[in-house]
Image (cartoon, rainbow, N blue to C red):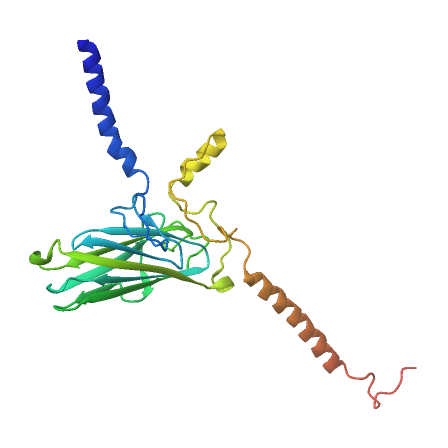
Length: 266
């Protein structure tokens, strides 16, 4: 009986120790209102709340919290992230900031937009925006170009008075993108998009077992193949126009035949 109790206590201890690790490895469930808008934000990269492009999400938190969301972005897209933070009625000067990270968790710089803003005393809300560079289908290993896959948004306050720490705030995140098209096309593409769990999924496919995917979001029309773009259409049209221009130029310079001042050949 004593041995049984000892074994039971050991198994219970192992279960409690493994529980948080397992929970931390998968995204946290995102509560939604009746309109399907997520109403909860994650507290880390692994628990980031998933949202689709063209959608929005809301969350309540406290000043000092780190709030995380994630969204998919494909090649030749230019994502835009906008955030609105509603502040309490009474507060001091606060500085809020949004950071966007790619699938390798590299911080991506904003092409334009106010990613950091300071709200003075009495300000009811602060609005932030970050327009990323165009996502590339392929890049050099040393480059920091944005690549196709999952992107993470982190919202937090970076400067405030100690008396304002822990005050309740409400946030809203909106994610959209603009399709740049073949103007941003490059030769080459990634073998797989940079999404969480893609390595685990690939290994599971080779073994024939059921794949384990930690991220289920992707563009509505799926991930692009990486080689086709409207650049091919414009290249073909340009080639046809060049050929027609050559034929027209030859017809104009050729004339109607032998000039009248040239004597006929013997």
